[in-house]
Image (tube, rainbow, N blue to C red; front, side, top):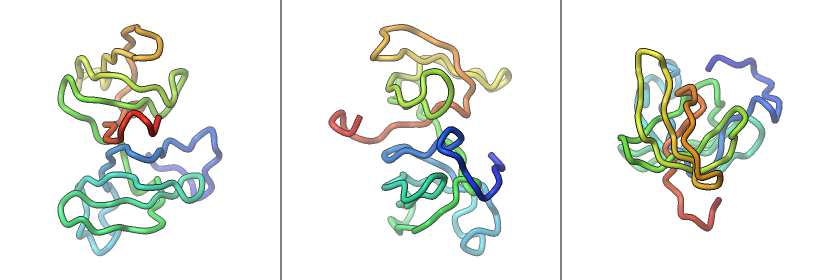
Length: 130
């Protein structure tokens, strides 16, 4: 995701309680490059507070262009972060890295859908946060 600095609400894919990966090598001197963390809060469209998994450090004001969605293993909880099913919860049934798609069972619709991988993120929050 290499969006411009201004992120419209429609292009904002950040949500609290999703797992993300840092993809900007220059961010924080490269210390967190390719490392995962959990979005704690979205403080503005396209700007998040992220708690890093490896050391627990909280990073303030991380631009979404420095991040990408991270996926769980098959059977893990996900949230759809873009597209027609945006902000729905489900379970990752299958991942096709070649086609860059994932098959997700959506709880609300009780249906299985195939989505682009960048429309899916691991969800790590509790049900009351949905």
